[in-house]
Length: 131
Image 1 (cartoon, helix red, strand yellow):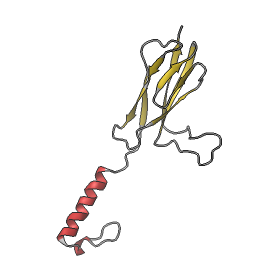
Image 2 (cartoon, rainbow, N blue to C red):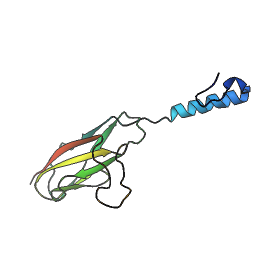
Image 3 (cartoon, rainbow, N blue to C red):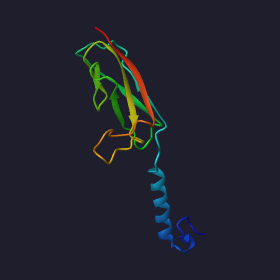
Image 4 (cartoon, rainbow, N blue to C red):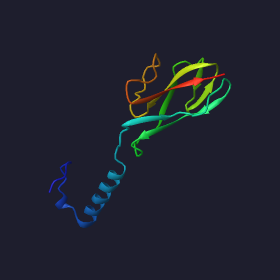
């Protein structure tokens, strides 16, 4: 029997066959699992200027390989969000916070313009900063 790589598995001795089977199990355990969906969990309490609030983002499926997110605020003058999902409220207003999947945020090779693409998997919430 030939495997996909053209290796004749019947030509392997018992030790080689066991090693091949172990390798297959390791590869199965570490196979690439893509991100399918993101969901930002927003703070339930009012956010006031000068305060911080932690946002979190659930990544689905939970076993996705690249499960980090890139945070972004649409108006950093109202509220900025850092790379850890901490919202820093500056002044009253509404701001949209986006989370983009690391899984498909393709970094720019050039040091110009956008540093990552924003057309992949994402989630967003609107946060009101109140006096």
